[in-house]
Length: 217
Image (cartoon, rainbow, N blue to C red):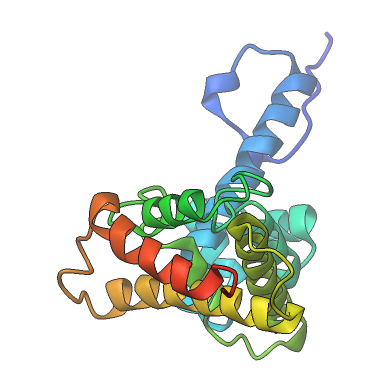
């Protein structure tokens, strides 16, 4: 009597794929498990930081064996890199906005408004703020914030009238403002900032963007 072959890990099993071809089921299960691990890790990195997030806790959140994290991501650093890469950019993606300060202010008001990131619980930029104790991970955090600042600079539409270093400094100040909004809202709950909507923020942010990024007269 022929025996039915099985493959993959029981931790990858998904009852929704019952009856589907085994090869396709394993691929879909692996993708779903990897995504679930990314989401669980991202949630913990945002809430607890890198140092206080453990692979064992992430695996427990998803209900899988710890070995699966090693299989998919190799290490805690690899998991952090993958979670960071899978997190939407602060401004919504590379090249998402035209080189126009008004569009930049509108984008910031949407990204910083109350309830802008319901799928994360907190603003995803919080994932970048807590010191990890690992220089390689801290370098990833710095690089991500530098990338955000470059996005701001490109989206601002400012010309070369200012020195490049000064322009980047001004863009980093704007990113720091956005990070500060996320931190104050999360850690302090300061009103009216905590519940400010996009409409509430657009005017003040437009003023800040114009002051920081408008070309000198």
